[in-house]
Structure formats: C-alpha cells, structure tokens
Amino acid sequence: MNHPRRIFSALLCLLVLGTGCQKEIEGSNNQNLLQSNVGLSNDMAYMRHLVERTGGHKLKLDLSDDTQYRFLRARVAASGKTPANYPQFFATLEKIRSRQKTQQTQLSDNQPSRDHIIGDFTVQPGGTTFEATAFATIEGGADYNFVDVVVWNENQTQQLSDYGWGEVYGDGRKLKARATGPIPFYGDDIFVVDSVNLISRGGVEDIYMITERVRTPPGGGMWHPTDNNRDGIVTICLNRGDGDCDYPLVGYFQVQIPLKGYFTFPFEVLRINNNSKTYVKLVDERGGPREMRFGPFANWLKINPNDKRQVLWDVPQANGVFNGILFQPYEDVDFFLSVDVELARPGRATTASSKISSVRSVTTPGMPNAPKVQLVYGCLAKGTQVKLANGKTANIETITKGSQVVADSSGVALTVQDVSVGTERIPMVRIKDDAGRDLLLTSSHPVITPDRGVVWAEELAVGSKVLTQSGVSTLVNVKREMYRDNVYNLKLDTSTLAKKTYAKGTTLYANGFLVGDLSLQRAYEFKNSEDRSADVRRRLPAQWHTDYQNSMKLAAR
Image (cartoon, rainbow, N blue to C red; front, side):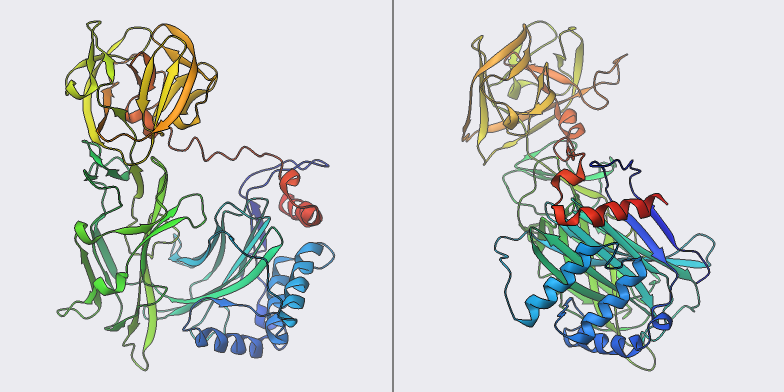
C-alpha cells in the first residue's frame, strides 16, 4: 500500500460547541492488519471457518468468544479508534460482550429492518488500482452506524487493499465504506471482500460480518425492467396508464414487472445457488431497507445449454410480482438483482456473485446500470371540472390530447400532452373551502398553497390556506373516503412558456383549486425525504457526544 491514510466527510461541517452537523465520515488506513497484529492470522482463519459454517453468508459476531472479540478490536483499531477518543464505541462493545456472556436478550421488538451488503469491485481509470465498497443501511436511521471493508486474496492470507471504513452519527440510514489497492492480479483471479457492521439504535446493538468472493466477469445484460420512455427512470403505473408509464398496470394494484437478462461468468457454471445472495428486490433509496422482493428468483434462473458460462432469466410480467411494503407514490426506489453460482474453476470449484443495480457502486463491473424505479398512483376523481382556455369548464374524463386548459392566474393556456387514467383502491382526500368549492383527489396529488408552496393533498388540514381561481381560500373540511370509479390526470406541454414557475411540470384549475399536473407530481417526489434536523447533537443520545465531537475533529484535519 503506497497511498497515505485519508479521511474525508461527505458533508463539510463547522463544529461549534454544542452544535454540529454530519452526514457521513469515510476514511481509510494503509495499515496491513496481518503485519501490525501478531496472531491475527490465526484469528482470521478462525473467523473464516465461522463464516463458512454459515454457508458464506452473514455472521452475527459473538463477543463473548475471546477470539472474535480480539479480532474485532484489532480490526477497528485501524480506523483510529481508541477507548480514550471513542469511549461510547468501546463501551458498546463491552455492553455487547457482557450481554452475550450472560446470554441476555435485547428488547428488540419492532426493530427496523437493516441491510449489509458488499458493493462493487472496480478497476479504476488508468488500470493500476482497484476499489471495493460495502454498504450498511437501517430503516429510519440510527444513533450510530459503522461499517468497514477489506480486500484479501482468495485464501485470505494476504491483504490486497487498505482498510476502509465509514461512520455516521444521528442518521445512519445509508452508509458506505471503500477500500483501494494496487492491481496485483491476472484475469482469472478471485478475491474475497469482507466487511463488519455495527449499528446502535435506542440502546439496541449488534455486530455482523459478511464476506463475498468477487471478480470481474466478461459481461452480461438486462432487457427488463427498462426505461422505455428514456426519461431516466422506470415508471410503474398502478391502476392506471399514460404515455409516461414504462409499465402500465391498469386494473392492478401490485408491483408487477418483467425481468429478463443474463450474466456471463469466467468459467462454466456448475450450480445456481438458491441462497441470500440470489435475489431481486426494490429498496427505499434513502436506506432501510424498506423493500419489496420478487421470488424465489433462483427458480427462474437457468444455465445456458449452449454456453455453460451463462446464467439466463426471463420472467414474464404476469409472473413478476413483488411482495412487501408498497412504496409511496413518486418515491424513487433502487433496483437490485444478484445471482450467486458455483463455478468450475480449474483446480477446484469456487463461488462467485454478479449484480445489476441502480446504485452504481453495487453493479458488478461489465454489467449495465439499472435505472431507478418509481411507482405512480396519484390523480383526480372522475367528474372533476377543469378550466379550459375558452373560459368554460369540462369534466376531466372528457379532455383529450390537444385540448387547451388554463394553467394559472395569469390565464396562460397550455396544451394537454397526455392523459393518465386508472382507478384507486386506497382512500382519497376530499377538501372543501370557505367558498363552497369541493374536490376529491388522491393523497399524493400536489396542491398549491400561498404559504407552504406545493404540498400533497394528504398534508392538508382544516384551516390550511390554498390557492384557487379567485385567490386564497381556507379549508373548512378535509376527510378521507373510498372511491370506486376512474381517476385522471393531465400532462401539460410547457415548452411554449417564456417563464416557468416550476422547473418541471405546471398547474391547472380543478373545481376551482390550483393543483399540479402529472409532471409536477414527479418534480416533487423528494419533498418529504428532506432531513430537516440540522443539529445532530440534539437528537443524538448524550453518551455518544464525545465520540461524535472527536469524529468531527478527525474529519476536519
């Protein structure tokens, strides 16, 4: 390792007594773990044996085992942590160790989902170095999240990378560590990437270790899901269809998409492994993992009889059903697909995995990146009166492409570019104002307010101020109700506007209320994911404050 120790923050912060801000701290150390820790080679062999007993999957560390405890202490020391500068980190290790020695259980009911995965292994520009990554996520965040990553030769007797690590306080929803090293290998080499993850949330802590064999395969491809509209995202429209839908699902309120593609591995595939490394899933972009899964994916995989290095999959849309927690409308979701196989490598069989993802750092080199996915289900009820350019109104279901509607108080008329139609199976929102206006719309439909800007219908309440065709009015009734007929929305062409109020999309009048068109819904897909808490110390348990301050000082050097 010839590069120096590095530390950098994903968000530059100014640390003032009693305040602070932080998203992520990442760092690395060129320390060779085996050379700097006498006896670690034996501990590594012991840990490798434990991981192999799990089938090569995730291992929950037992710190009551002296070897595992010693291994972990030696490993995290490379991140610069000592009991003096990170007292709560080491107090947490001792707490876990004590609990496991006495076989106590944690109060872990209703704990959020978490995930810990090995990311990519890529050759850097110039072809002389590589980079490997690991990710750790927890739904809703944590008090503290730590993850590291190291690359070894196949037998794990030689460290090939530096020691990479990452940590975050008072958030921790999505964290990455990365390790780099010089390229010492030839085309058929296989490496082992391992990673340790500690998460503390509400006094509940655990530590996990994962390992994965990686290499760069010759190639692969994916035809579905795909961005048919070439707008940068795969749009799945539930219970409706319009020209912006890549996969319209009229009459369905479940995620159903086709899956088709292939991986080419360096050697013949002996077996497709039906394990935790073979999957297809959709995951909350903000980390979590709040997710939906298809499966079992392994049942749809087959070895190509004409080229036994290839694994193929072809799942029709009718069978591509994803189960889990349905995401919010217009919420960006990451796509992950992974296949784990046993290869006929000369000398002895070995396992390897390949991935395609919308997260670039997870996609295996040589594979195409998948687009992000977005679910769409937000519209206006049948019978809604839309103000036309001629001053009249018309039921939204009678409006067609090419119609002219009034966009805002300036009276500008815009052309209808597309029409969305579908049904709704979840309660809609009915709003009434002090002028007697009444509108029924889906919970995620954007409504324009004078004081809060664009909000979703579900965010409105009695007393809320809204914009209408006669000015500002006050809502006197807001309620939820089921609706059994069609719902609609319009996409307006803004290309003729000299000055745009919104970067994407525009507005129209629906029963006199100023609301968003189809494009404006997508423009505001992120508005509820903003982190409004700027003071990490305020939301961080007091026992973590010293660790946090020292972490920030380290990042500022």
